[in-house]
Image (cartoon, rainbow, N blue to C red; front, side, top):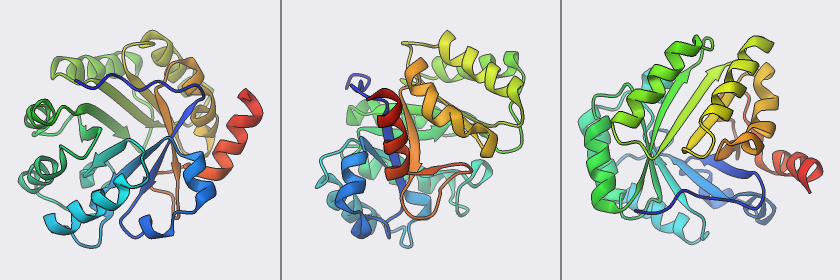
Length: 230
């Protein structure tokens, strides 16, 4: 099994579609530590096309995250779970990590795909409306761990300081266990900069159009992080 990633600086994953790949610039690539390929945003979902995009992305020499996001958690289009599983099986040997939702019916199936491909499993939870209560978040994390997640990603909408404090507590509580915490929305911007220092494995930034509420352009986020942390 590949080990959990560690960075000398707060790590940045760029969320990209297939149309973003040819447009990546040198300054963006220098700012990126990982590339998340948002397959649900691809114009063509044929396996040949998807494999071709991954082959091109491998040329950047960055760890690749494969994500076919469920429409219920922010995905761009309705894709059957059976099709999502087929896609994950097709690219497991090219991806360093595969992301699937904790509430997905294929979570444990994707774990088996990850085992065969020697790929890390990111089990993710997204709430675009609010930040759930502490006990609910802990239960979600425990569900992910029980299913064999190597990394748990919790992304919730931040509406106030209470939400930021709660996500901070979760980040510190899960330090060293493989956690990604993100506060989405305008009020959650600070979490994208600070949480990687508190234990979140890495943060997400945009190349082209933002792929989630509050994503900061990758070069801008890298500049902020460099100023803060050197």
